[in-house]
Amino acid sequence: MQQGGTAGLSPVLVRGQVFLFYQDLLGGYLAFVNQIPAVFYVKEEIIVKETSLTEARCLAESGGAVPIVRQLLADMVTPLGLMSLIRKDHDRYFLLESLEGIDARGRYSFIGYDPLLRLSAKDFAVTVETRKGTQKSGKGPLDLIRNYLKEYQNPKVPGLPPFTGGFVGYFSYDFIQYCEPSLRFDPKKATDFPDFDLMFFDKVIVFDAFKQTLFLIANAKADAIDETYKKAIRDLDVMETLVKTPVQAPQEEPAHLGPIASNQTRETYNENIARIKHFIREGDIFQAVYSQCFSASYDKDLFSFYRVLRRTNPSQYMMLMKLGDTEIAGSSPETLIRLEGRTITSMPIAGTWRRGRTEEEEKRLEEDLTQDAKELAEHNMLVDLARNDVGKVSEFGSVKVHDLHHVKRFSHVMHLTSRVTGQLKKGLDAIDTLCAALPAGTLSGAPKIRACEILDGLEPQRRGPYGGGIGYLDLSGNMDICITIRTAVKRGDTVYFQSGGGIVADSVTENEFQETLNKSGAVKDALMKTAEAE
Image 1 (cartoon, rainbow, N blue to C red):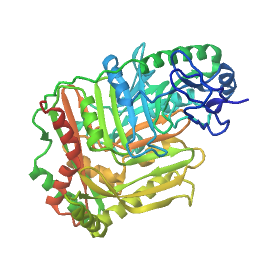
Image 2 (image 1 turned 90 degrees about the horizontal axis):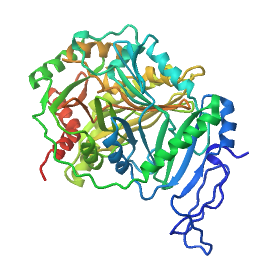
Image 3 (image 1 turned 30 degrees about the vertical axis):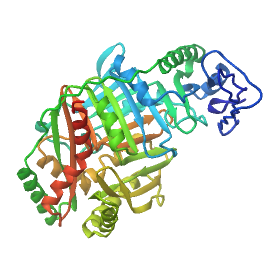
Image 4 (image 1 turned 180 degrees about the vertical axis):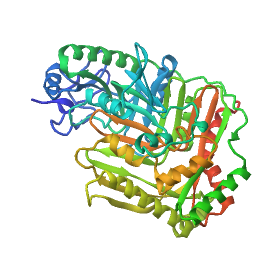
């Protein structure tokens, strides 16, 4: 029997253009052939593939939930066009995409709206919001996340995108308290942001930029598959109607952006750098990542901001999401932690230089960066910390470092990057992996726990989403979480963005302050562009 994402296909009838589709039984390979003698027509949609009830029944034998898939040709639909429709009628949605080329990651864009539930926690009090209402939960927050993922666990289906449903949202920097019982932050510095805020999606839309196809996915509970399959097909019909809706270019009025202010003065910032260097000399820590938060009034949603940011600062992790009262839009270059099967990946970024104004200056600055003793020492220290974090949950001897000191360029800065991998220990899962990694050493310091304690004492308020992680935990046990940097967060009529720099023994105070301005430049510039009058 042919199953899941690799089911066999008959030639597909196409209106107005000639295609012949072949389906490879194992690889999900799709061939497009133009201008062939045999011509076939249909009236409307071009359906490449759809999961049958027979296939769903077979997959349901493993329990959990079955991804019911309808695959369409998508050469006339774009993720941003679809988001422009969704944002008009929904206040809970997400877009996750990558703008680093059509590779294993960059080929997919993920969209979800109308989540099954929203799960958040503040100071260990858990709130569950469903379509029926909101209630508090007495269950442990980490176990609650695990329970929902287990209830909807997907079978392994070859040929499907890496995300077919699950949790999408953010884990704040403060989430470390849920994983380290000895660590408690100052309650007087708390903000309104939850410690984590997640939406659970049983339906997703996935764009495959490589094959120019669209996956509509609705998860059907396995314990009553005949009935849940019918509901999933109805959900797919609704999603198909949405993606076929004509999109008009949005006519956006310029936003009103108020004066941008920091939560501390330059003098205070410099004084606290001196205090951190004192802790380093005393042997408490080797490094700490001190930050400042910027805020301003902003009277529009973040859609236009995101459109500007994805054009001016394309990165590996692009995100736009609305979680009811909170909006997030960002362009993060850094993987916090990724779990694919049993392979764990962390990609620390540490060591920052500004971009050159000319090609000649760019080459000189790259050479300076790769030979700067302070930047190399900081990077090596944080690679060691990433090795330690990955090693906590990896099989002995499996942790490896790849591409050490690789230079990566972004719109305003260049960074030193490395990649750390390991193989997850038996009996552990994505939540264990996340707890081992969050917050990243590149956003806290080394040793991590003591650095977090010192930062909590010095920074004027809790960080909230900044320095934590944004991404997904899927229904097959996988996870992809980036670090929340180069990101704007809007709550009410106020937009926030934050940046920091790693402080070591020989840090130059004025340079460190300027580094935070360089790092926040992409977000600040994008906000200002959306506020410019036409």
